[in-house]
Length: 85
Image 1 (spheres, rainbow, N blue to C red):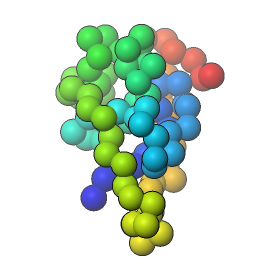
Image 2: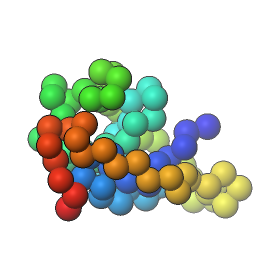
Image 3: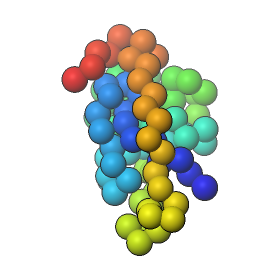
Image 4: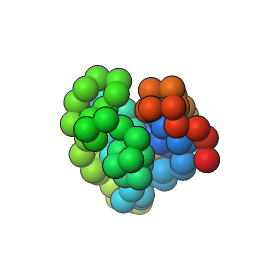
């Protein structure tokens, strides 16, 4: 089951479970679409080099039993010197 991490690793922007602006790689590294377009070289994950795809949205009815992760990962140094918003 996907962790559905709560924020962009680059800028720290909140990405709630229902966000359509969240992208992930096969390791579940999480990025917002803005950072992927403007700060990630080639639009690839700077952690693993994998491609980014839209993160699936977990139905709200399933979030109570299968909650999204609360672990925030923020590594602006991995995305071309980005800083927190």
